[in-house]
Amino acid sequence: MKINYTEFSFEESLKFLENDVAPQLGDGEPIAICDTLTEADLLPKQVTSANCTAMYVKVIYKSVRSAKYKECAYHAAMNLILKIVQSTEILRLLNIQADGGLLAVFDTPMKKQIEEVINLSAMIRSVNAVVLTTLKQDLSSQVVTVGLDYGAVLCFNNAKDSLEEKFFAGDAMLTAKQLTDLKEDYVVISNSIYINLSEDWQKNLFVSHDIVENNKYHFAPLINIRMHKWVQEHK
Image 1 (cartoon, rainbow, N blue to C red):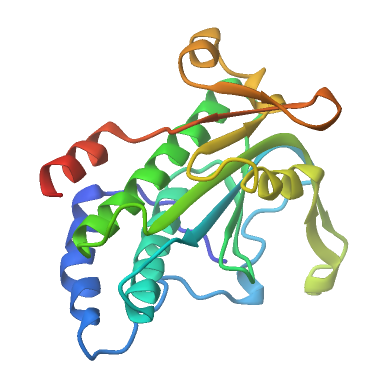
Image 2: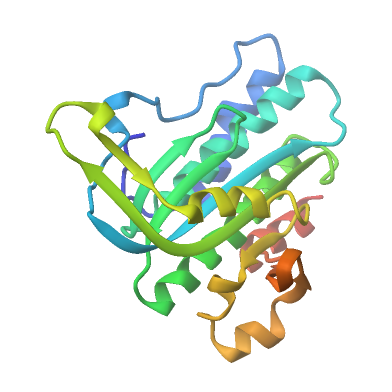
């Protein structure tokens, strides 16, 4: 997917929801996701090997008023999630998966960059609440879970024009998706992410949980304070 490194604007997002999304609840055609996937856009930047943070965003539904509301809420949320993810220049891969989830890979050789991705994750969870509030839906009707893992990711680029010779590979991408199955409606991180956080973040934000073979995952209901405040004021 083509990546546009642009700053995320909460004000512009509210205008988008009011002007472009809400009218679609009538008889109009469902809105489309703002960016269109093309094969040529899959590799905006190419690396040989980098220490990366993989993010997987999983969207599921509990109960919605109708299929139309479900589709509208998903497209509105994904539009804004795409904008949030693209607001940082450390983004290296962005793709919407066949199951409707979003996969992103960030180049994070420094701990402060890992924390930047966690901040983006908090915004992703909060912007979904903004969408549901705007559409007058129960906040539990659509659940967004974010999984994060850290590790080496390779980019193979053996031919200039052949997409088949260009691809990213790394266990972190699979693990990030698996983490979203462990704790619903949270930001869920692997232990490799956790050990790279400051002691303050470890103690005050995340709860730890054991999984198979003594590996741990950690989770927190992270939110963006500004967006959360807006939701509280407009519920």
